[in-house]
Length: 308
Ligand SMILES: Cc1ncc(COP(=O)(O)O)c(C=O)c1O
Image 1 (cartoon, rainbow, N blue to C red):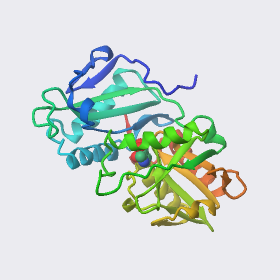
Image 2: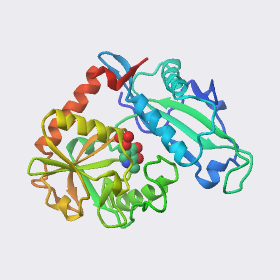
Image 3: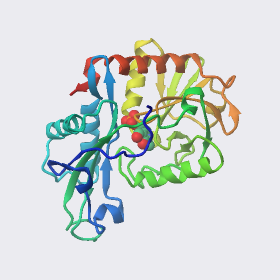
């Protein structure tokens, strides 16, 4: 059976250093994170590969989690990177999971509600559950996406290199708008009008066999799947350019696709109802997507996986 997208109840959640019962992993209604969005988190996939059950690029995800916490001065918790890596593996093992989504979160807990969060402790939790294809079956045949009227948060407003829960209010406005209009996913432009990313994915374009993706200066999350795509593309010998990408470039592109932990590699075949090239999944996209899925099927290269 293919897993859906709901967080299906498992046995245990790791919370503040202990594996506890799923139903006991609760926070108080006056928790700071609930009121002011003081949360940073990760989304990680675990795959049932031919080399065993392995969490994909776990160390890099934990590095990014620590970076996010540092940006928001929420790194005053007691656990090391090594301990959180072990905790993610323990959550998979303890719940007997194979293919799963792993969600570590750091948040300001109960204690006070001053904006600066002086009175609230920083807490850490990790949950995991089986998870399906994020963008549904359309991701297999090609997504129809729309450029949202909402602008991506600007660099001097909120830092997009921090994977903070509050960033996703901006993503939600964008994706709600376009889903209401019948599209599969949103693309946001940055505050200068250049292409930034999807509501929960990085974006790639292909034009004349060159692969383009927005730079980290275009208000993107520095995606770990993006990094994986760049590595795969370079291994295939493609020229890759990380640069500012004007909006019109997507209309005249030969191919476009999203990358992300949730979306994995998902082809885009229409933008704003305009077909990209002939409206079919492109050759470069197909090649990169197939290689990505081959790697996660066989669990190689081994250094991309933390096996349980
Ligand atoms: C806004 C945004 N951009 C990009 C990505 C892709 O990042 P990664 O490949 O590390 O999952 C995500 C993933 O959650 C995201 O939420």
